[in-house]
Structure formats: structure tokens, C-alpha cells
Length: 310
Image 1 (cartoon, one colour):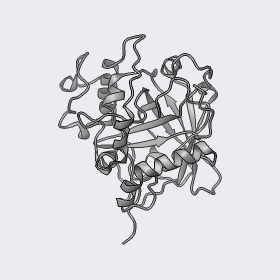
Image 2: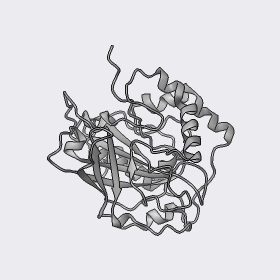
Image 3: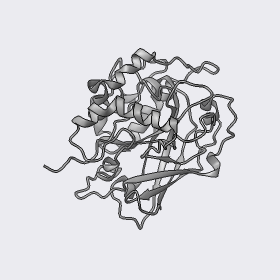
């Protein structure tokens, strides 16, 4: 879809700018075209991928409830001006299509499918060690987008530079190893106060609810009684299995993937003890690009889950 003339953006634009006043009223294809163009305009020059991370002192902001609440409260596809990604700072972004299957009980996007932008990033500063993350933004006609956050098991081989070597899930498996226990302690230390203040039933430092996806379809139809799985698993296809050598940078590897083929099979578990059920497939409809816009401006709102009963 081409960008309407009144929404057109020019190249070399700054990354801090406002979305059009009527942005949320646009069709999903118009939103996707607008944000994708901004990502294209912000591509890093070849051979100049940045790797400058926030200091340890800056990371202390993760323990600040006012800082953390922006991730839950901000209803926008762009970050507030001046806000910096403290984790998952660098990544690559691509367009995707979600094909939903019939025959399952889940509502909203799980039923309608949709399209949007996917961002694959590394959680921490390292060229040779790290834990990847996946964020999916599903655009909705006339209303705010809905988002998914998923990561593979923290027990993975951190020297593996293939971000798609293991399945992703909205429940992070931090494991019981020494490293897993350290990660769990860090998550709980950083986000405990924010979560404690939330009047929700599901939100945890290592679990992202899926209610937002189940409450609305891609055409903007709201669901009265939504049904969502507790867990989804994104199983990479053979097409996604890139070589796992340490070089080159994972962003370069992502850029080499050919679009158009199925990248993930989507499985759902109604409860954590249920058997996985295949409910859809995800394909990338563009190449991955590394972009200043997606690193500094593109925003994925976190789902807070259902409110606790009074």
C-alpha cells in the first residue's frame, strides 16, 4: 500500500517526531505503510551498525516504576521523545503476515490473523553472547495496535548467533541453572514494584499476557467475551534456520533472509499444562532492515492482562 500524500515522509528525517493527529483512525495498511517508510528512511548506512549501549548507571532506570509504567500505559506506536531503549536496544525490523487457522476457541487476532511489523533484537550488550527477543505489532483498522513479546529459553547456548534456533514464547523459561536464577532475580528486582502496583492477575516479570490480542480483530471489531491462550509458542521453520556461527552480526544475517516463506508455526496452550495446538503461521513479507527508527522510536506497548476481580 502506498502512503497517502498527506502522510508522506521524507528521507533523512529525525527519529523524534509526532504521528499524524488522525493516525489511530487510519486503516491498518496505511499505518503499516507509514511506519515502514519511516523505518526505511532511517536505515543505517552499510557497514555502520551501531553498538553503543546504555551505561550500568542508566540501567538503574529499569527499577523505576514511572519509567516502567510507560511500557504499560502509553497507547502509541512511537516512543515518547527522549526515551531510550535500555534493553533490546538494537535489532532489525520486517513486515509480517499472520495467517490464522480455524477450529480453535481463541478470539480476536487469533481468529482473524493480521499483519504488522516484527522486531528481532538482542537483550543485552554482546556481539558473541546474548538472548534474542521478538516483538510483533499487529495493526488494527481505526484503533490502537496490539502487541506480542516473546523470547526463547534463557537456557539456550548464548554463543549461538542464530536468533531463530529455538522456539519463542510469551512465557520466558529462565530455567533452574545458576544463570537462570540470576536472570530471574534481576527480572524480579527490576520490575517487582511496578507489577505489585498493577491490579492484574497475570502480569509477571517473565510472562506477557495475551488478552489484548484476543479482544479485537484486525478490522477493529471488539470481542465481547474474549478467549485467549495462556501461552503461545512460535516454532521457527527450516527456512528460519540460519547458520549459527558467531559472525557476521545477527542483524546482517537477518537481512539475508528471503521474504515470503513461512517463518514460524504458531502453537497455543490453553493452560500451561495443555498440549500445544497449531493455530496459525507467520511469514515475513519484506526483508529485515536495521534502522535507527526501529531502534529509537518504534514502540511496542506491553499487555497488562486482565484486571483482578473486586
